Length: 489
Ligand code: ADQ
Image (cartoon, rainbow, N blue to C red; front, side):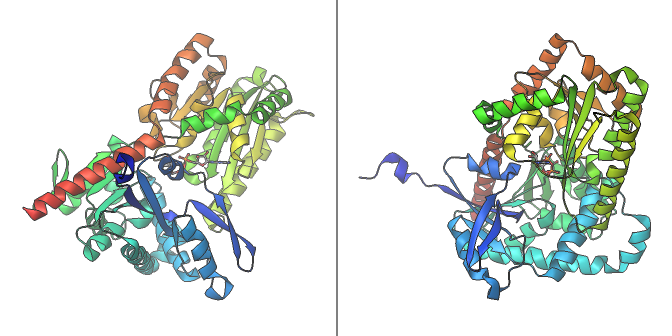
């Protein structure tokens, strides 16, 4: 007969997100290999038991059929992935346009650039049309693979219209939506073009999740102020239909960092790094090169620190790893030049013949190297102007169990809510405050450092990405079951 475990039905989750968990790399005319992405979402779902995940996402590259689109599809299908192909025009209007030029800045409280805004204002409509078209394409793909009993988990600001399209296609589908970036306060949200329509579409989901209580509250206020919908303890009520709204703070796969630090090759690398820094204190920044990460603000604060504390010159280095992203967008190119200019000026000002105070790298580093850097750092410096959560702060903590370094953390990150007691919180715009926190971190007595690290470490190792995904999926299945029983009654 069947064993207990083989009878247990695996929950199947259709994960819908902008990017796949794998990046395709062409080997030959008809052969593909894949590079695993390291994102939080991928690792969160990797460790969940009793769940079978199928990913539906943009392929990230355009492969015409004559160049092997179907072999790529087959190869991805074996990995449980369904790619969606977008042509150049859609990528421009949907991805570079509506997602990254309008929603991304506004949701991070960056007002749209004044001059450009006038020039592109007339095309907001066409960008939104493209956004709609792409969301509809995602919906069609989900409908094609959906089987009764599946749950659909939609991710992030790229797919805010998806819940509505899915429910229109099949009202019985269990649909969850999670936002990885902040939801802005209602005064900002009012300026989002087509904002009311977007709100209504999100509300079609059964369950909506945010990283923090603040993001959730902003969303509930927007539903109330803009749509006039009633807020209940469980979510938003609209003519008898309840959309559940809750907080699900994401985490990291902390064990993976711990295990990596045990590898002999990584230990060796750590020793080499320590030797190379030659007894200098190491401050570390790891960010995607994005305006929301406050990289110029961070570097200028470091300059102020050196200027006010000349005895520290040549005794401390700032290592800033800035992975380039969205390199085709002019705003991001301008940011790169600006950062290079500031770094050059400061290194010219405070460098010596043999050393410079800032090591700035314009690239990503592999996982083992990243862990080694996190482990040798004395201080991590996170100065985001706004950030949904900020996983870099968690990763630093996970790698600091022997060193017990200090985390300087922007108060405008989601992580500031969870690591409040164990970090030096700063306003990244207040250069004087950041500079004095740098000093405080560098001279902090061991017992104080240990105490703060313990708080952070206890949080990061218990609030893992796996727990996050399990909690969300459990809430989604519960909510959907309740909704179904109400419909049946
Ligand atoms: P991001 O804006 O990408 O994520 P973050 O949460 O810090 O920000 O995650 C970045 C990830 O990329 C980390 O895992 C980090 O290790 C990796 N990374 C960054 N720079 C790297 C480098 N130079 N080399 C190698 N790896 C690098 C969005 C939101 C966040 C939210 C997450 C998850 O903007 O606020 O925390 O999603 O929901």
